[in-house]
Image 1 (cartoon, rainbow, N blue to C red):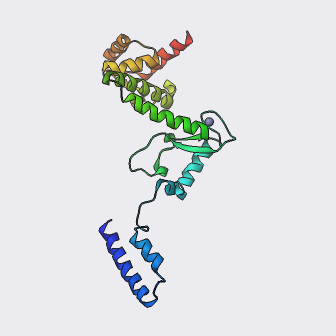
Image 2: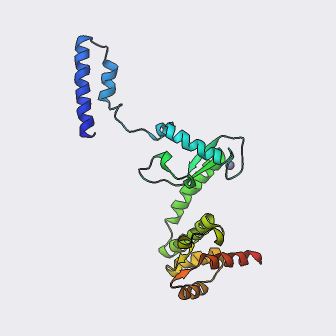
Image 3: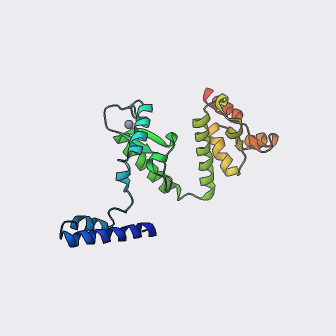
Length: 207
Ligand SMILES: [Zn+2]
């Protein structure tokens, strides 16, 4: 307990003690609440989900998703607003909208289980495989954010050449060989322009 709160509780117990002396038994419940720290403990997670700030955020996400599951399109079953990831110490309502998702009950359960098993399984991989996977995930996220070269932000969408393992993950997604990536990076001071990656993927699926 913080010192200021400790002092406040001490003062409050004094007041309650005085009241109890004058009217025995009447303040027992309050006294118990103060002693048990009920008034000072942190909100539990389920209490936080009843907070108006979360209710407002939740509504915003549900409305943006037009009240349907973003995974299967279900409109009939209970909808949940899923936190795609968690940041330590952040309140549920302090998340960016891109970190939240509207999911039906079934999809929410499935996605949550998948998140857990994926984290669990990835931890068994060696560093090289983790790097390749990190490159592949990086590629997926770039496509999600930028989608097309026209939508890209010049300073953020281009890829800086990292390790060969990392680049193999990028190459797998965009359909471009490691040798070709090295060749492009050499021509561009270590950078791979997003437009070239995008074009390679377009050709890969045009076949
Ligand atoms: Zn669903």
